[in-house]
Length: 321
Ligand SMILES: NC(=O)c1ccc[n+]([C@@H]2O[C@H](COP(=O)([O-])OP(=O)(O)OC[C@H]3O[C@@H](n4cnc5c(N)ncnc54)[C@H](OP(=O)(O)O)[C@@H]3O)[C@@H](O)[C@H]2O)c1
Image (tube, rainbow, N blue to C red; front, top):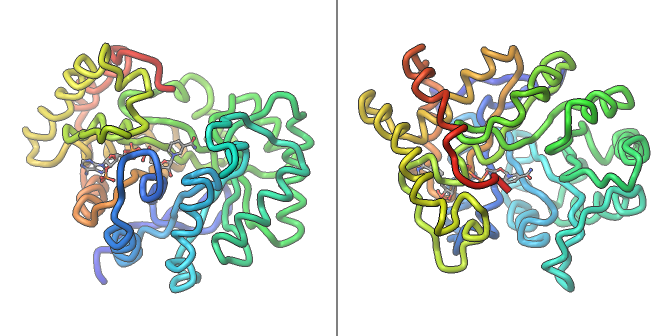
């Protein structure tokens, strides 16, 4: 296959991965019914096009997303770089327990369960999904470092932590990746975290880079879609946020590209602004959209386009979570 996307390091001196990854969460939960055959085609096409970094978590589908990825990983273990996460307590017995735990005993149980479900001998990147302030960071990072030592995990990551927490953790063990929400509509991490990641050599993995679909101009919500519970998608806010996203649609139309491509190109431009590695993980279950989203890598936004996008985050109605 020609036209493979370029590779960048996953953290300082880290393994090289395609500079855009794939979020796999929606293949198993939250965003309405998924077609497993189509999702598998997305995974295979991703590899063919040079996407090598695949993102899951133990809580997506309460283990189901990791299990779904297992046959794909078995067939492509040498080429696919897999990231998963621990931290949420949800279980099949308590699916609505959104509590978080970072204690070492939980981490050791969770990693073994993920290794088993994924069917791999080592996890390439293991994230703390959310910080549990009741557990000292040194204890959880220490336990995660033990997993590297034991050969169960290759590199460590954190999600949605503060700049101080990132630096504190990095002093205990190198943190290859920081995963936080980052998009044209969600720019919290620009205040402090992005510069700290750049200083430490930690790659930033923006999740929900398409604003959970809001930025694409093609959002449709099934009756059971979990996004209905998010403030930005509420009846009170969705119309205003859809209007704000139309600015992206207008830029896209003027260039003859798609809104999703503009939104992702904006994130790739942030790598230049902050001097940091940025590997967005847009989620899709549709092969054509995967191909479309990779087209963002061919777009360099102009100063005028960047200036048009700059005020949008401040106009968004509703908290991001
Ligand atoms: N660390 C965390 O706390 C956290 C939180 C949330 C998500 N994540 C990770 O980040 C990944 C990405 O986030 P996300 O899936 O929530 O949001 P996202 O990537 O911003 O948006 C995904 C949504 O956009 C749609 N979409 C994708 N490409 C499109 C296109 N070209 N045109 C129109 N619609 C398009 C998808 O629908 P289709 O699937 O139907 O294409 C899906 O509904 C997840 O899969 C997950 O791995 C991590």
